[in-house]
Length: 337
Image 1 (cartoon, helix red, strand yellow):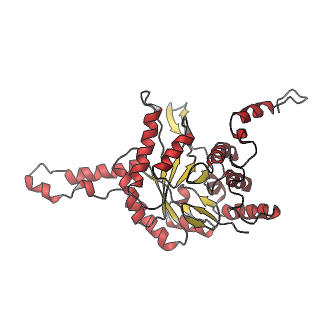
Image 2 (cartoon, rainbow, N blue to C red):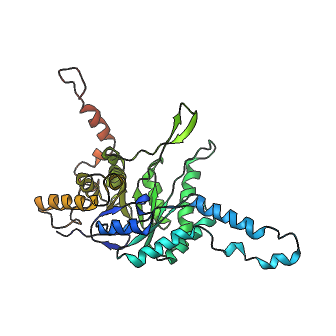
Image 3 (cartoon, rainbow, N blue to C red):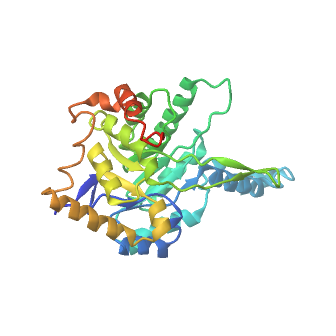
């Protein structure tokens, strides 16, 4: 069985790869993922806020006392070209490349078109085989238009693309008026791949402490439907590889994602629940399913159930909404089933 796939120009042994998460925080964890069969790893994200924080701290200490005497001004480097940010992240990329034999994909999480985007070049120079740009933005300003928000995304992609020559994937959420248009423009701005979709973690209220608190709720297979639908709609329509993430927990989820048109699936919650060895279990189940149905390769099935490939493409659009509602019926107990 030929399980190989290609993602961001990288030849991968199979399509089940860990997504950016705490699973890759540290070289030991990365090596465990490789030993468990990961064909590539997207390392946990480095956040814009982390880079900006260290930049401000460095700014403070370098400029402290410069007004005391004129000569002091010549003692300090030009901050515009000073490399700032968490060195630990770059060191992890370097160590991972030295100690593993699989592609290592860096991950930058940010949203503003600022100096932090220069860190993309540092990640590339550290040896990353590709870069995933994780754009996480909640537009809370009532005066901000949808066009403003979309331009923000495009500008960030262009800024990062200008810094790197390695393949670039962009991970973002589904909350756009026209996702297909935005994603196409992101590809035109320089993205080689798109990752569908970012999970927006929602805060909760602590009624005892009367505080707003974070609540991390990991995905289930039910969360697969949204990225599955848009993967199927976009497959073959945009000139970029698609990675499906969120909701991949069993081999059936993997199969659906590939048939929709994903080149790879990115898994996090399932591995966090059951450990890296789950990769081999998913791969064995995928292989058995393919052999039973006489497939010869993974590539043979990629996109076979996309909107462009099925006989009823409207099933992915409004007609599917009507069919879903009509599929409910009463059972003898009076419950809707």
